[in-house]
Amino acid sequence: MIGGRWAVRLALAAALAAALLGLWGWAQATRAKALEARLEAAEAAIAGYEEAARIRRKTDRVLEQLRGEAAQLDTYLDTMEGGDAPLSDFLSDAARRLWP
Image 1 (cartoon, rainbow, N blue to C red):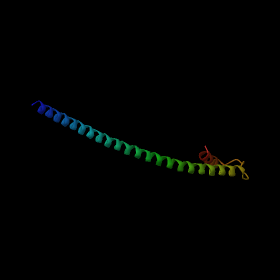
Image 2 (spheres, rainbow, N blue to C red):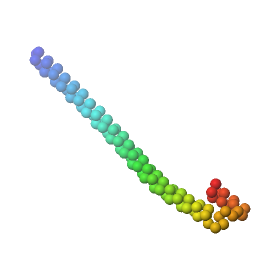
Image 3 (cartoon, rainbow, N blue to C red):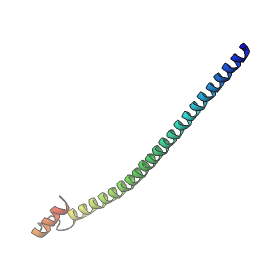
Image 4 (cartoon, one colour):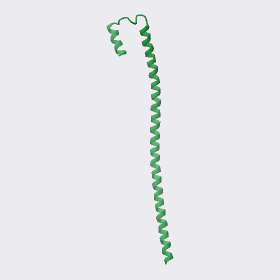
């Protein structure tokens, strides 16, 4: 009888350990899925940031080119013959709007 009780207790302990191990494994799998979802979201955010940075670099290059062209035009207009002559009211108003 005593040996049978120990066998039952041992079997119950083994079943409890197996159940706890199964529960722990399920919790770890659930945690892993949640972490994978967070990783995918973070990777998508990073891809968005990289795309935004690429667009920003392209925009900065275009703006730099436009600024250079505007500076060349200003220099040309300042140095051309009659560049220091007074403008008509119409041209003066237009110039103030274009070059505030």
